[in-house]
Length: 217
Image (cartoon, rainbow, N blue to C red):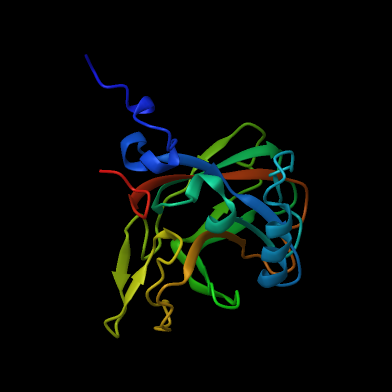
């Protein structure tokens, strides 16, 4: 009889990440004058299950992110991005939406935030007004230097970890030592002053488990 992998013990799905395979998570949107304040806003709201997780295109300084220390899907695991999707909820108008997708870090001692590689996963992607129609799903190409890889090496010979999770940091793309920092995924609206015009979109990431304290082979 085939083993029922969903019933191998009391630990639950996250503790069996490698058995259950990839997970799809929705990124939480945040808007504020700086990334740090947007992050703080997301932290304050990330445990609210009823929160509207739709990204509003016209808002300046818009971000969407998933945060390991507050996102139950990521506890105990280390993950890399396999796929990124965008779903349009309201027709775009006036201007396109231009985004980058990358990895940011948080120092667990003091909480300082910094970019590991802000466009390391997706280096420039545009959803136009003509294609930004309600119900359309975009499979966003992972064209950044890190793409769907676990890491890459800088010209200086340092390893930039593209993993998401607790304590997975190594170096940033700028060769800063961030060993042991927490890392999370961030979508950034790269249009200065916002994208202008109507439009709502949600972002989803399919994440593959690659290790962690609760990773099971």
